[in-house]
Amino acid sequence: MRVGNAHDLLQKTPGKFDLIFNDVNKDQYPASLHVAVPKLRRGGLFISDNTLWSGKAARPAAPDDMDTQGIQEFNRLVYASKELYPS
Image (tube, rainbow, N blue to C red; front, side):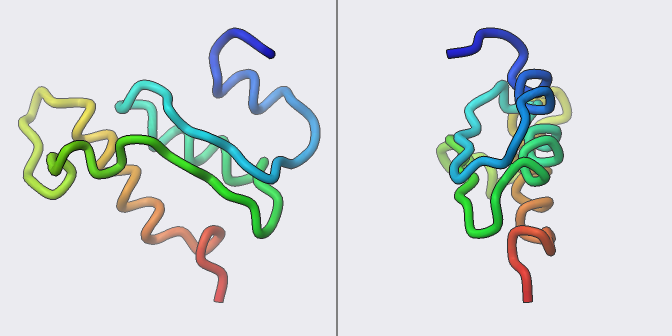
């Protein structure tokens, strides 16, 4: 078990992973994707909690709602990711 900043720990840990579970602060979800995808083995699973965010992800976020904005940006990045959806 490792305790600390998840992004830093993942970047420093050698090797690739079969499964990465993402449950950091919601405003950090986009950064998590950028850190995790290079560490994910081809065919591995990147599981993220709260990507529907109780329906808030489908509605316009308030300007000060950084959590919802983070989830929405994460969802856009996942959808557009060529690494996660190879042709």
